[in-house]
Amino acid sequence: MASALTLSLTSSIFQWKPSQDFPIRTRRSGRKSYKPSLVMAVQPEDRSQISTKLVTFLGKGGSGKTTSAVFAAQYYAKAGLSTCLVLHSQDHTAEYLMGCKIGTSPTLCNNNLSVVRLETTKMLLEPLNRLKKADTRLNLMQGVLEGVVGEELGILPGMDSIFSAFALENFVGYLKTVASRNSRQEKFDIVVYDGISTEETLRMMGFTERARWYLKYLRNVAENTDIGRLTAPSLLRLVDETVRSNGGGLRLDGKTSAEIWDNADQILERASAAFAEPSKFGSYIVMDTNCPMSVRAALRYWGCAIQAGVHVAGAFGFARPQSCPASVDVVQEFLPLPFACMPSLSMGSVDWNSVLLGSLGEDAQNLLSATASCGYRFQSPIKFDPVEKSVSLFMPGFDKSEIKLYQYRGRSELLVEAGDQRRVIRLPYGIQGKVGGAKFTNKSLVITMR
Image 1 (cartoon, helix red, strand yellow):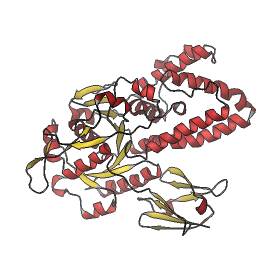
Image 2 (spheres, helix red, strand yellow):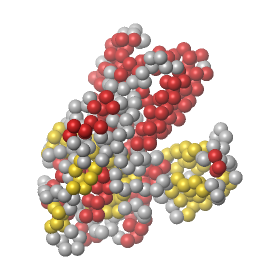
Image 3 (cartoon, rainbow, N blue to C red):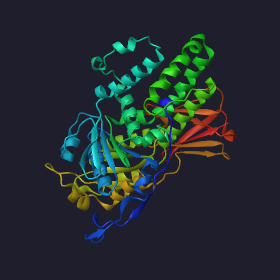
């Protein structure tokens, strides 16, 4: 269904402007000074043309992912950005920290900050109803779907991530047309997502690229088998009718089969590129700097995020006040990733004005601001050297023994398997060939082709 939606990748424009209501303490003097805060550089009537940024946090359970998400949401809201904190867990930590009840629809918690909790059982009902309406028009299922009651359906393993992806799409609009995005009643500058687990979040962020693989094989079935040629047109019509009711659609009228499949692939390709684009997406690695296991897990998730093809904007460490900043060894482990400390919160109600003005350090504020203002960009984790005929893959958290390389159907692609993630790398013409050797150095795997 996601492949039948269209994508608009208009970028946001932010600028730094002085704000007299958001003072922070300077590092050198400890006195209060006024640091510029993020405000939008467009007029309200132009907001419909601005993309929503998606921010998320990755790390081991108990490392501070939810706390970091709440910190970030509060920070962006205080900076004047329309922010929504999206939770997909029954854990009430965020509710406790926010000091407000969180329901299944966006609720304004304080100025500029809305919160919502995703519940898969409720999210199941909307697409089912859209499918019923589409089938009513097409009558492909001959009325059988009308007898299905959504409230009677339970949630199967894997449904949480799928419905999370669709729910986030409603907020960020990576796959939607400009018209459908403009029709949304609520428009946020920043969406902060706190998922069920880091593994599920990474799978969800890599969904569009993986979907392209499946689309390729489904197209082969549809075009080269009798059953595919018989059923594919009807199924495509049903999908198109279903997503048209939500503002998308493949617009099948007058298109050839090849054009339909090509269009679906292009939609997924553009969506996949959005997760690698700092202006549209940013993930942060989170760890407890007092726990070596948490630090090692964070390093591993950094590598997994790169392998999944998503942009990693920085790393945050939670530690007791006397142990921040983090040790030099921990910071060195994450170079060249920017690193900052998050303050620990005491038990009881949280005074966010005090926390953001006094406890959230300048490094942490700068790191959070980088994603919002699109001011930070890493070099590509994949580098091609046509002279040496080699490919360099930046893969922190892994060693050579954990990485497997495959080549199928010629020598134009390289499939890399690491950390329960698979990634296809398309080789430039001058580097195409058979793998001749590989060595691991400075967190990078260097593959020589011959």
